Image 1 (cartoon, rainbow, N blue to C red):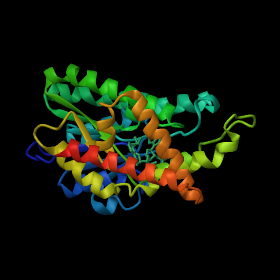
Image 2 (cartoon, protein in one colour):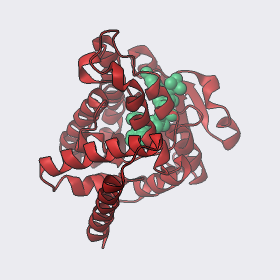
Image 3 (cartoon, rainbow, N blue to C red):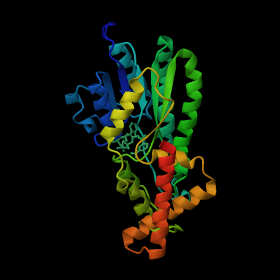
Image 4 (cartoon, protein in one colour):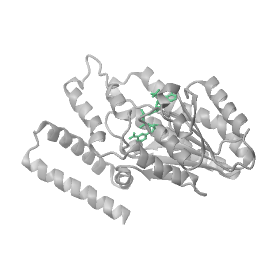
Length: 310
Ligand SMILES: NC(=O)c1ccc[n+]([C@@H]2O[C@H](COP(=O)([O-])OP(=O)(O)OC[C@H]3O[C@@H](n4cnc5c(N)ncnc54)[C@H](OP(=O)(O)O)[C@@H]3O)[C@@H](O)[C@H]2O)c1
């Protein structure tokens, strides 16, 4: 066990494979002088972290025995966990009518029940010490109901709800819960998502298969925030004395926050128009009249963002 005089924060993070957010978070917490335990399903996927002073452990968040073992290891070595980051997650992109329900259940097992199981294993230690912070990786997706992302968005919506309630339940024990409402970040998630489209043979959406892939790719073309820039900001926010409850961060998170205050019909039109227009631009088929509409649409979004951030 580390000495009680060691005041460095002990951080446990899930889903830390190279190329993703967890990997950057692990390095940034270590640079901020924390004792970091990075976990992933495959230890070899966390290349580079041991060299950065990060300890690595195997953890599949859907495996109850592995959760108990990892938490026990950290507690026995350090005596505490100050920050738990529930980062592990998978995405799934396909029309609701084509959804493989077993895959949908697997997504909920990872993104919702995995995060809750970790929290149930770690938070009691924090409550007994009257100190700690649980960070849940949410998303802007539940705010906008983006086509093809229903299962992912529904799981994130569930995580948002659990976070909000948990925040109130843990407050009496002086344990914080922070929800990260993240916009678009460059990671491995987009390519993995395209691989999950899997339309049924008789799918109503078969003629639009390429279009679906293009709209998912859109995230890549929006100059998504780099994982390092995102991680730098999040580490700073979660190590301060009063971590924010809901932290809107990364590309387009402010625009999605603004959408929450707009009528549903306006948001529906904006999303459909934006996705259709993007596809037409990629195929070089954008008519001049729509181009003008597109420019006006972008100007309106920029205006809203400016209004929201001033
Ligand atoms: N990138 C974005 O734009 C964005 C936006 C909002 C929120 N998020 C959220 O941020 C988190 C990290 O995503 P990312 O963008 O960094 O994607 P990523 O590069 O695909 O990383 C996801 C990580 O989660 C791990 N994982 C998946 N299933 C797991 C399981 N059962 N147990 C343990 N680990 C598991 C993956 O491991 P493997 O390598 O073994 O698959 C990987 O390490 C996710 O919760 C995601 O929903 C991302």
